[in-house]
Image 1 (tube, rainbow, N blue to C red):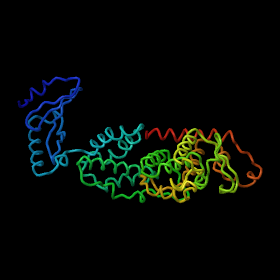
Image 2 (image 1 turned 30 degrees about the vertical axis):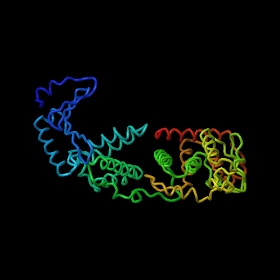
Image 3 (image 1 turned 180 degrees about the horizontal axis):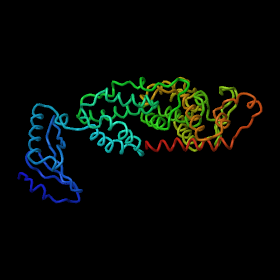
Image 4 (image 1 turned 180 degrees about the vertical axis):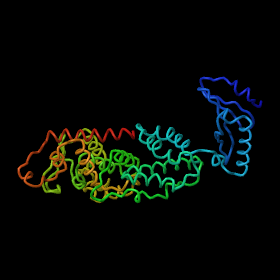
Amino acid sequence: MALTSTGIKALRVKDKRYRVTDSQGLMIEVMPNGNKKWLFRHTQHGKRKIITLGKFPSLSLSEARLKKSEMEILVDKDISPRVKQSYSLKEFGEEYYSKIVVQDRKNPENIHRYLLRDIYPAFGEKQLGQVTTEDILDVIEIKKLKGSDSVALALRNLMKRIFEYAISQQLVNNNPALAIAPKYIFKSKSRDRALTADEITTYLKTLYDSNINRAHQKALHLILITLCRKGELVNSKWKYLKDDIWTIPAKISKNGLEHNVYLSSQAKKLFNDLKKIAGNSEWILPSGHYLLNKPISESTLNRSLSTINFEIPRFTIHDSRRTASTILHEEGFSSDVIEKSLNHQIKGIRGVYNKAEYAEQRKKMLQYWGDYVSSLMKKID
């Protein structure tokens, strides 16, 4: 039986949402909070689909019927009705945030802040299909002029992901953010690169989501939290580990001096994981199942890293050490303790007289660093 405006208003609220049919394909859905919205159900390319036409009473019964008729014409012409739906960037951005970001991240507030502070005020009222590359560039340029290049890149990447989702929902056909290459937004100097906290989260999430060798994933993570050099890990054997200390022999240490790495609980777990992968090999990172008697080459980790598409500016494995040093200095740890943990020789007259190992301070600092990185990883669990 066809609906009437009076009948729609009289529909009672129930504990669960329910639908009432008006005519073929047109329904009204009543939500537990009392909201009512119009739905159009149709079949296209052999699949049943439902799209929202609007809310009642903003969209009246007669208007919903007219809109439904327009949608049917599109279906008959093999055009997806969703492409013609009226979505503002803000409306779709909120849908993307609630359905994707909130479900995917433990701390989604930064993403919402970008939307509310930077994107919606600039072009949030525009229809989704009307947003252009120039619109996104304008927002990016504002941030770059303020010196916030990393935020500018984050905004570009957010818009890219929003339009990827819109394309998957058949709402638009093009992604205007793709025309903006990340390298033109933020390009760090090769010897100045240090990852921010947000970039560490992105780095680790992308690393573990990638299809590179599992041992390489854990090795790259281990380099970050132990402050070691790539070559020191690649050329290490299991006999160099004893209890909570990894002793790097002078022969594989870059400065030719034996060096102790005090292992955090996170580092010990990663070594345990690598031990299971390495099997009976004496090497921490054996070359392969059939080459257990030799380690991987020092370039192997570089090649693995280069195959991953990170949505952050380019960085190198060595930048993991600079990242740790930068953040630990910001957290107030002693430069001497940090330099000793990096296996750097203290220069100048202080280096001549300062032979301290700072063992206890290094243990505490490396555990702090392990905990810090773990807290960032909780955002991606």
